[in-house]
Image (cartoon, rainbow, N blue to C red):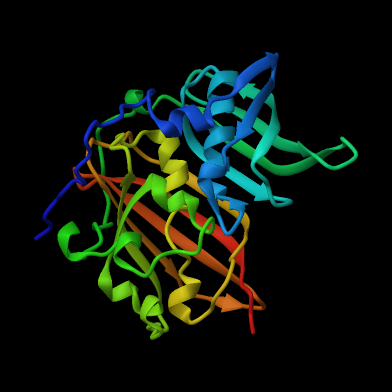
Length: 287
C-alpha cells in the first residue's frame, strides 16, 4: 500500500507566488514577443534544465493562446541554453472552441549580438477543468517505498560546487532500487523512480508538470553510463490538473541504440491519477 508524505517547509509557497513562478515569468514586449532572464538556479552541470525551459515556453504560449492549459507540447532542443537574457517568439496557428494550437521559439544572442534559436515547440492548449470525469485505463501507479524510505541529493556525498543548482529547488526522494548508479553498481535496468515536488512546497500545476518530466537523474545512469544526456526532442501530454501533494514519477528506457535512447515518463498525483506522460529522445555519451 502506498503511503503519502510531504516534505516539511517553514512557509509553503503557493501557485503564482513561488520561485518557479518568478523564474518562468515572461514579460510581453509586443504581440507574440516575450522577454525573460533565464535563471542560473535551474542548471545542472552549467546547462539550463530542459524541463525548466519548456515551462518558460509553456507560460508564454498560455499568454498568447486563448486556452490556459497545455494538453500536448513537443519541443526540439536545437542548441544549449545559458542563463541570462532570452526572447520567446510565439505564433498562433489555430484557435477553436476546445483547442488552440501555437508554436514558440526561445532565442538567445551570440557574441556578435545575433539571435540563436535554442528551442522550438509546437503545442495544443485547452481547458483541463472542462474535461469530462470519465477515465478508462489499465495504467497503475508505480509501486515504490514511502518517502521516508527513499533518498534525495542531501543523503549522498556533497555535490561539486555549482554543478547541481537545480537540486536545491526540488524535493526529490528516489526509490532505492533505482539508485545503484550512485553506489557504483548500476542495475543495468533503464529505470528511475522518485517522489517529486518543489523545495518551497508549491503544489504542482500543469506548467510545473513540464518541469517534472525532465527533473530526475537520467535513466542512462542505471544503464551504466555517465555524464550529460542532452535532450534532442521532448513531447509531454498533460492529462489532468494535479491534486495537491507530492507527485510520483516513473521513467523507463527500453532501448539504447546508435548513441540515442528514449525516456518514457509517467507522473502520478496524490489522488492516484496519471496527470502527465512524456517521451523524450536523448543523446547518450558512450565510452
